[in-house]
Image (cartoon, rainbow, N blue to C red):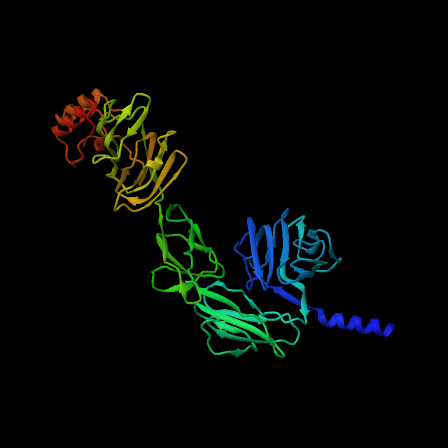
Length: 497
């Protein structure tokens, strides 16, 4: 009787046995999407999937953020063991003791934490960030005597570049055959003895044989997608700077290498921040294998040692503007602001209308180049309604109600896409603060009727007191004449310079 039970037990084992297999996750080889642990991430290999509510599986080490939950699941058999090899040892930063959950243990002084059990999936939590250099998952893979079809890995789907396809059969001692095509359109049958390499869209069919029995056909299709590489992001983007800035580059495409150039011809691999201390344009592109991204660039302009801020205040700087809708001009040396369609409102702001043929704002400088324009908008009528006119260089960014243009030009033109309103507009010009105010002939800091009298006396040679000669040239034609008197009077009458 005892011998009979022994024979039955052996027969049962032969019909359904279990053979352990391992699936090894290595950073840089099997990856997810994130390079920083700020959001959900996931990676899969040979039927095993690892997810983390806040993780980074495309980083140089697998990162599981503090307070996150990690799940390991299998579609190819129950998980028996998972070994997490960590950056730090027990009680050190990023060590295995920061994981916790049912079935999980780690030993003092070790860098390895181990989960053991028998489940399709399990979950661990993190007390603090964990970083892993390797994760090994042990799967109990069923082996049966009954003939079953083989399994493709991966089981069809999309791919880029080239793909390694493997076949396995759970039936012990079964042989596997495969061919290109479908059951109805069969290619040459091949005995499977190693990976099949796929480099283009391909349909494969396989079957298993044991003795005189043959399994059903299994057909899968692999569709090749053209690999695309995201262009690098250059930080900061094009801007002005005072003394020195550090330029960095990132690429969202996993495993991409970034290259940069200072002349758009000679390229170097990016390895760290690039210091910029003078006017410079940097070009950048990313590559994965032979596939390149588009080329992007950023231009950096070093500001002179001094700049002048010219503020257009809607409460006081009317120029030729008033409460009637029309084009108007406001001059504040050395900058002129021209509005194609607008008004200066009694509540102390500029109203700019559009879109129409006359809409637009033009800033011109008779001094140094304009390097920055700051628009302070109003709720519901924000700076986002403006855009750079065609042909204008520089960068234009908006945030909330406000907007900022940066560049280097003596004329900057904006299109008006919808009505916008501004309390102040600050124009920064490269150069020294002027030592005079145009029309302030007597040098008292303001332009009044007394300056007209002083200017006439000066031109007649009758003024014994010192005057600011630079302020006399009111029409800025580099001469001193009665025309300057006319321009000064027009300005005092509200007609602008």
